[in-house]
Length: 459
Image (cartoon, rainbow, N blue to C red; front, side, top):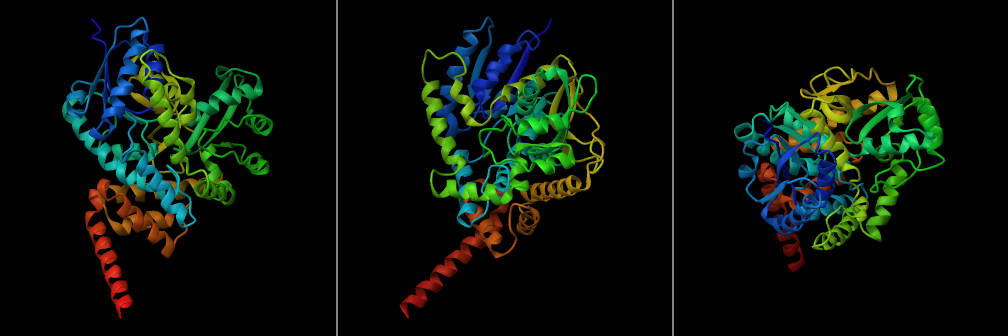
């Protein structure tokens, strides 16, 4: 007799959770869930209770008898889990605001997964995900880890490389959105097209063919300049240069704007910083509005406003992945997984974001082949930046962190970059125990400078 599936969501108090519940309810017949555990930390307790009640109302309004459990005890929740999903933010939105505003103060990009802010999100997140993996080894050694926590590719790489845990896939909603919007540009359905993605999380390209095998990538590129580009709501829509896309005959993901149109994207981000606030500050307002809705005891479905949060179609990625693994469906899904030769321009043992078939054995990456010279160059720089960032997150070595800053294309190297690194270390002190020695040194230097200034003023 099938005992049903136990799912644990770390970061259960997230505003995304109702979207996750919607996806599970939609797939219940192929993914018979027994119980769902939503886990959070003390600082997220209030949101967890609000979202937990909302999640239970959604299930109560469905034909299915599923119990939602809420807890701050991660280990209690993980016992005998079948799937563990992660969607947490170490330091909450306040940490993201610092990630965005401190680099912007110095005239550089502050963004959730790109540049200095993205690296610091990795510094805070990777030690936590590795702790979760250690708990899973003891409490649910057969479970799959389905990661949606950003930077998703780096987090997934850390789980495999340092956590020694292969039953993991990293997910992102960006490919899902592309595969929803682009067919509409051609007047066809998603199932009428064949997609192949290759690259890294938030740094991939894709090609498209019709069901007869004819390449239609260029047709989509032409149509992109007539309608919706399928961007997440958190990316400013500055068009790519059409000539560049035609030359590569591939479609870059929305985040490539930070690299292909760096000048304009930086100018826009700095203007937001000086006026309406960074993206994180805008999201904070959206979150407040969402939780006001979630408090309504009569609300038992996902509100439309959730699409403004930037994670639209999250459930299509996360829930379909879980259902595909559970039922051995071998569905085509774009995931972060071990390369295994799918992208020959990168080592086989590193993590890439590629098209894959998801089944009982996890992701089977679809070979994409070698990339053209320009894209290959970008990809190799970005992958090595990720590897150095992950190493810094694990070791807490200041020099390694400085190396990561230096190799990142979004961070201009030099004294200003070092100032940003130092300020972010001090700003996130609470969440960076691995950098304890460096932070103490910086604090001491700060006191010495202050004392020297006081001495000079008193003379």
